[in-house]
Each structure stands twice: as structure tokens, then as C-alpha cells.
Image (cartoon, rainbow, N blue to C red):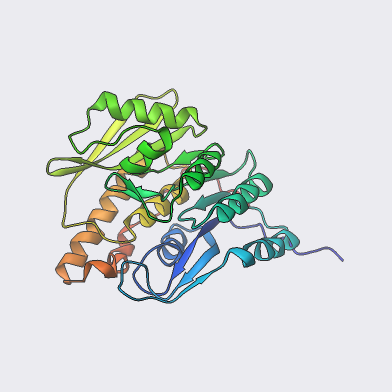
Length: 289
């Protein structure tokens, strides 16, 4: 008896933690990717009642369950048009994801790595030097890399500074990152006065900087929204720089609406209120898997 084929629809595997409240990680990526007409298949790394920005939260590490979870996907014969990794809490989790890339990656799919390692010039407390080394191995498998400015510095062993970054400095960062493996790099969250800039770099293409007016203050989940749109658009064949632009504008709309509703910063951005404005742009024929 022939086994059923589960790969008639485009799918993206999202490897990240799950927070029940606070709008971040899988809880954000799943509806965003679904709205862009792609099936989102989450692989949780840990479970939170609410994210770590709150004073108190429930937490369960999922490391020991990740491989048995993946093994069931293998039994089903699942294939993915995209794979997107986010926050990883240990060296062991990075190694599991590295094996996942090796087993499920192919010339026909796109791997997006969002190296959630730090911000404001410093690595997160959970990120040891050993984990930073392991993350560089993960980056070597990426087709698209979406670090913020701090993470770009950590990955390239470049000193971070708080002064305004010059175009040549950011270009040098992007070139170093691309030399590690990914063809496409976007360095996010570059402060430029009243603007926030994202720097797009593609091998063989002129680099571009995309600016949007700074709105409010930083909220949880914006990086997860950004990576989800970039991953889904890549699978749908949307040009990289167009995707970066529309992801940036969508996040700006989310923040503006969150301010209008006077939501606490810990609650993230109310993307649900503006999700209808995020339209899929499918520019290639439909693929399976």
C-alpha cells in the first residue's frame, strides 16, 4: 500500500521557542507564514507561558524531545520549501538544528537563519563563547541571514560601537557574513537618527539600505515577524530587497497600531490588527514540498 504524499503544498519548518503570551517566536511566525499562503510546521525548542521580558514565566526546555519529534517528520517523508531557525538556547540545540539542515536541506529549498544572539552591543547572557562558535557553523548553511547590528558584529568578531555606522563599515560586515555562506544578508535595526535602517546585501548585486521612520520603542517579536516574512517571500519568489522593504513597512504599521491601543511593551506588536494588509506576492509557479 502506497504511503500518502504530504508534500503537495509549500511548507516552511520554523525552529524556535513557543510563548503562549507576548507575541514572539512561533506564535508570531505561524500566522504570518500562513497568511502568505504557506503551511508553517513548527519545531519547538522550548515552551514558555510568556516570554522572558516578563518578571515571571513558566519554562520547559524541549531539547531532549526535539530529535524524536524530528524523527516522526522523517517517517512521514516531509519535505520543506523553506527552513527558518530562530532563538536557540544551548550548544546542543544548535547541533540538532545543524543536523536538521543537513538532513532536510536541499538545492530546492531555502534556509533562513535568524541568529538571535544579542542586542545593544552585547550578547544575551545565555550565549557563551562556545555557542557563538557553533552559531557560525549554522550560518554556513544559510541561504539568507537576518542578524541585527549586534549579531553581525558578534559573528564577524567586529568591535561594536554606538556611534553612527558608515556605509563602508556596514558593507564590510555584510561581505564578511556572506563569505561565511549565505548569498543574501540583511543587517537589521541600524540606527540613523530619526530612521531605522536595514542593509541588504546580495552577491553580485549592488547593496542597498532601506530606511523607515523610527516609531515608538523596541517591542518583542518584531525580529520574528521580519524573519517570517523574509522566509515566506523567498519561498514565494519575491525579490529579496522588495521583501525587506515590505517587511519593514509592515512592522512599522504593527508598532503604530500597538501605540494607538496603548499596549504594554512586553505584549509585543498587535500584528493581528493589520495582518490583512500583508498580501502574498507569489512571483514564481507553485512548488510542492
